[in-house]
Length: 334
Image 1 (cartoon, rainbow, N blue to C red):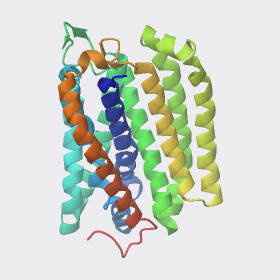
Image 2 (tube, one colour):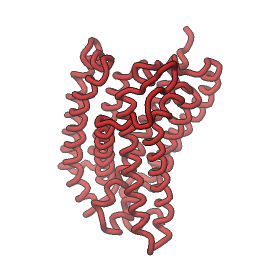
Image 3 (cartoon, helix red, strand yellow):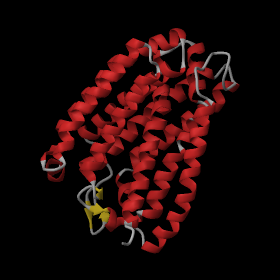
């Protein structure tokens, strides 16, 4: 039986995007939370908690974006023109926060400026990722296999609401990461923020679960048609279970549990998007087979992916293992 290369590559790209969201999500969340922790000592610890892993986390963004160009060129050529504005703003935000990581430790006079760059870049990047997701979910106008919409089609109440929701979700990841990685007063204040952010994240998931199905007939059929409606019944229970684990972990002092449960919320949301989309890569316009490169290209690139993806996973796991444990003020990136 021949291998469905387009499906295999769709799974690889989907995994890369999920890996980026759950890994870079918490360090974007740490940046978004900077205004709530004005003390320099706390900010030093917050940056040091993500310094060993933040740039490695963005490897998955490169893999997802680069893979989309190489493997699904038609989807790349359709999605990018529709989302130029939020994606360019996202990249500028990531650049500013990346530069802030280096320059903040090299100056006293401009330290506040780089604090603003780190927090602002994180906020802009997270918000624009949500806007881009919302614009993709609500649909892109495609005519004759090319984008046929306008410059501002991405800007709608739904996409803006998605951007706000993702910022809230990233903030939850950031607070639970700080609970897991820090101690003392910083960890205590992070715990106080984590509970309302957890409730807000679950509330946002509920709102979008009611909103999304009415955007397209395909979504309505997937969410309320058999057998995929089984997922629609099970997921709310699992979401509430994750919220329970967050609350339980915060109260019992199991510092890793809230973070892992927060990751669970993101995975459930991502699974819901996948079920709504599949087999479309541009919803209701292009399937993964429509957008895929020639089989020879897919085969050639798959050989490289089978080598590189395990290597990326290995060094990522090693980095997290080496830098496990709590971060203290006197330790870290200086």
